[in-house]
Length: 212
Image (cartoon, rainbow, N blue to C red; front, side):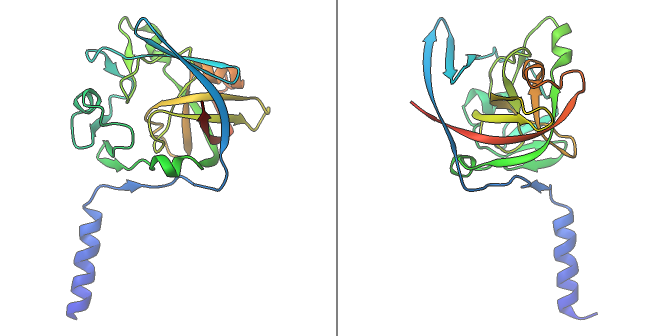
């Protein structure tokens, strides 16, 4: 067998042995810009973006992650990466697959159409709270979301293309790790978009740039 062919086969085998790096997001021209205000008090940070309000509270490190399949973030155990603040655009591993988030600059013009689902039902029935992938307390009734590639946190507009309802959500978690889905919303967000009972909906997701 020619040496060049042996080298090619060896290179292919090497690629197969590596973790998969997912880069399925789209970046397009155009940015949605909205004004906002921030208020901080008693350990909480409250964002007012348009007609929507988001209350952010950091979770105790003793709380479980909403997605316990996250094996590492930036090469560290997830909670250590969270403690060190090494989460925003850091690569992370889920079930042996390595995901590389987009940069903050790329995220400014992110726009994508696909299927949305919602998550967090099990947290309603558990005593302790849960922590998102950036260390915030997960609020199943809030306007929150999980995304595989956006920096944490990022605000995005989500439009339900089936009924034209739309909201702004704060992406503060990782997921969904299910083929064919681009975003996981909290139960509260799914209710506002009108697909809580159905479970999934076709949506448009686009980044929101905050202007203070």
